[in-house]
Image 1 (cartoon, rainbow, N blue to C red):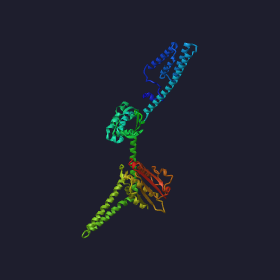
Image 2: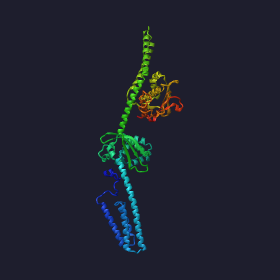
Image 3: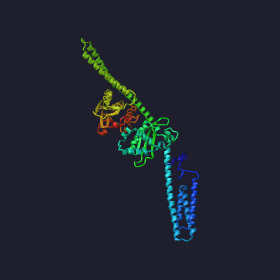
Image 4: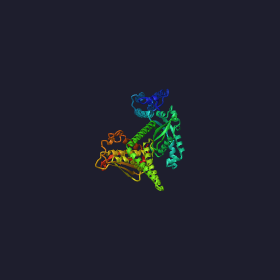
Length: 534
């Protein structure tokens, strides 16, 4: 396919139709040949005694004019040939309409007419094809996405040979034969690249881009190319993969690479591979995640401020037990003779309570510390129990009881423990606030865990409050939306961000909508299939 010039690409209309590339003098020579041929046919048809339809040869003149004239010019040429045919007839036969000469004249005129129709159709088809080629090239060159036009026919043959050898598991084969991947990279022939590809790689021109494909490859690029080989081998029609590539200067660029393959029975000689530069997007996402992490940390610290009484109680209990056991130990040691066995038991209990206090302090440090999420296999029930323990004293002060209904065997999930506890604590505190004005029925928060499937866990926090206003339900998880006068509306928004970052889903519903009585329930669905989505 011919590449339009820069002037053509910037024009608002397709370039002029021409069958041959511009070569000085060639169109003029062809016109002279066509005129000379028409003259020769006329004289031969007029003067030759041979009883044949010589004028049929005007069809050659018409076909030669297809690339030299537009539609109007071609019709004028055809009309001229028809007039020459009739002029030859009248010169040679006058007004004598003998059957033989008249029939030959009609045959010649019919041949000229049919040839003209065919020439006009061919000319229109050529115009459509050229316009389509121009549009394709314009889109190809001006697209904001980097595009490579590549010949994968050699790779197609190599993969076909693997099938003939009985290879069915392409991934295992490539894992044990990495050199095959390198060989396939060398087989790729770059036919063309667009301007966006040149800019993406920081190259001076197309020649620098098409010189060596390997020079732009990183280990991630090789991995994505290997995945593309698997897609081709498996007969997939399209392929997309997030990867990376390096520029001429060695700068790493994050990319989304995609390709569309023809059917297996067709040739892979013209495969378009598009590459979208996602470097800035990835940087923005990382900055957003850092901002969300900072906001979640602030929210955790703010939540701990609300739990001062509960935290003090959790720390004071083991400290008081340590003091009590220490005093008892001294009394046992002051006896005559000292009761060493009892004293040892007191010391052991003090050590146990000290470790308990240390565990409480460590949990508080974890919740208050700002750190990157640690996506690890997590005991969901244990994390929920620890979170409920921190809130228990605060709940008691508000006359609220916390009930845990945890299913014994849950699928193992990968999640950040601190973030899960932050969500559970936030939902329990919200449930407590929802029951502040409740009277005449027990104030109870139930935390449930259920295996929704072999690969999914649902955590629910249910209260017996007044429920959620249906008008507020659509905005419940929006940032800065709150139904409490003293609230700032970030808690549920942060909970949703954390859950969705782990590939999960969070939603709320009124218990009355499902025949569950008073209050509302918040549900979190986490799946092992989307574990650790950060």
